Image (cartoon, rainbow, N blue to C red):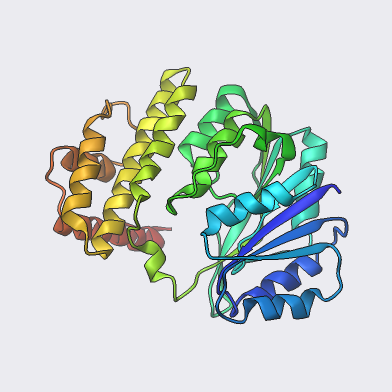
Length: 327
């Protein structure tokens, strides 16, 4: 078996039909799909069984609800493929998605393949989030920089295919939900010798209208900062050091935005501030826009409030609006 596709499913009856159908429509026919039904209480499982039927490429396993990270780990452990890819059950893919991954891996002799993606909205509109003209391979320190900086591609698992051997030394963290992909990706990317990035957008990342809870701060989400701190172990030059510091600042600000939505602001904010004060952030070498450096400075000094976070959102939206008219 050349490819294993790990598909965690939890209460996505509105989307799972399109997702499964897009797998069945792949021009690549030799694969296995490990479907982990993570305790769904809706009709997701029934829809999966209806679509899969007697197709022995699909293995459907039902567990109690343990979260996506646990479901993925289970799928990886069960899988048999030489390569492992992931798919979220509310998303879908183009017919040549997985064949493009494998072609790129073979052609470039790479350990990891990354493809571009589109944001997909319920109105059948989509926004291209990658530049299809970019086709680049990375090794050594440049590979590390691309992973740490998250500029060329993001920390998701679902837009990537990995050589199976990369998972041998992964230590799974399954007790938090924000940036859990990065927690796994750290082990995969820092152990890879070569990666290939192809900006062709063949993955459709569905923007749901019912996922506001996912944007709220959840228990242990502060562990996302540990994911970034882990990257320090692989810093070998000033460029990588700055990239880690910038990533840390952005994650801290993202956490502040998440706790603003929830009702746990004061206690969690203080904890985030304490963690950030330990970081030796070089404001002069930072590549972040001025507004982010200012916000991180306020956070370190304990001056970051809900009102500041609201102002940040307003300024960013204003900048995006102006950019649209200028361009």
